[in-house]
Image (cartoon, rainbow, N blue to C red; front, top):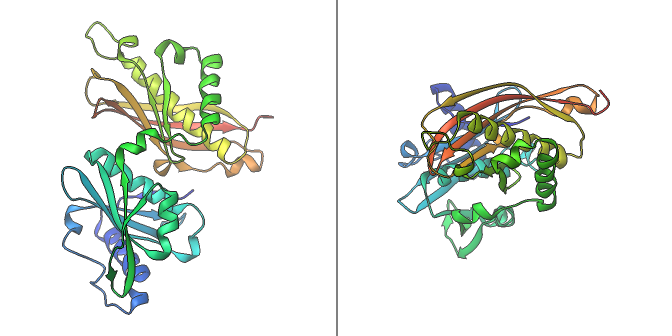
Amino acid sequence: MFHVHVPETEQELEDYYHLRWSLLRAPLQRPRGTEKDIYDEHSEHRMILDNSGRPIACGRIYTAGADESQIHYMAVDPKHRKQGLGSLLISALEDEAYKAGSERIVMNARVESVPFYEKCGFSLVGSGQISEGVRHRQMIKEVNAMDKILRHPEWCAELQQEWATKIPISQHMGINIRQYSGWRFETAAPLNANVNVHDTMFAGSIYSQATLTGWGLVWLMLKEQGLLGNIVLSKGNIHYKRPVNQAPFAVAHKYRMKGSLLELFEGRNAKLEVEVDVYSGPKLAAIFSATFVVMPVDA
């Protein structure tokens, strides 16, 4: 499974910028160095690695002010296109805008890429510009619209019912699916149903919500790939950063997962490592790291 990585070491940054140059500037006969600009130091950078650790996609997001983030330098290796990597990368960059509190995300997209970004929820707002001899179109996406995404609502309803019938604690806690974009899965819970004597959320409730959120994302992944399997939690660790005293919600991202479901095709157990962030209002309150094992239904 491909995963999104933050380039941090000197070698990782070198590989990241080399990919940016080779995909976006070398085809235009532009020299090394033209793949960088003065905003790189203040931006969030992401790249997708293949199974050998080689970068095959890259992108950057820059928070321009209190209400706007800008995506630049999006590129995917031609050999790996049509595999969902662009959507995976957009999801990772959008998450940074979401956490930064931006109201909208803007970009100048190459004309040939406009249909892809429209599928990702971006809208055309201007004629754009010609940069490096390439015509672009200005596009925008409202960040608050991300809260309203519910991909495959019938699956989400089925998952909610699965919890209600097979995991009764989910109903007692009031856990509900708030968002599923295909890459981001989010659940919400009422604080008053999970409060302790300190008027904060029970540690056990935080752990349970995080577990169900990770479990739910794996369940939806099975649906996406048309597979059947029994999902069990093999290992789970949680780091509590602050009390939850505001409306709690938990988020799991597909781009942060490690592992693959391919073993299920061979009748073997599959293993996935999942991270879930739990928030108290806008503040990160806990980070849950789990290993889920998916067993073939006839095992």
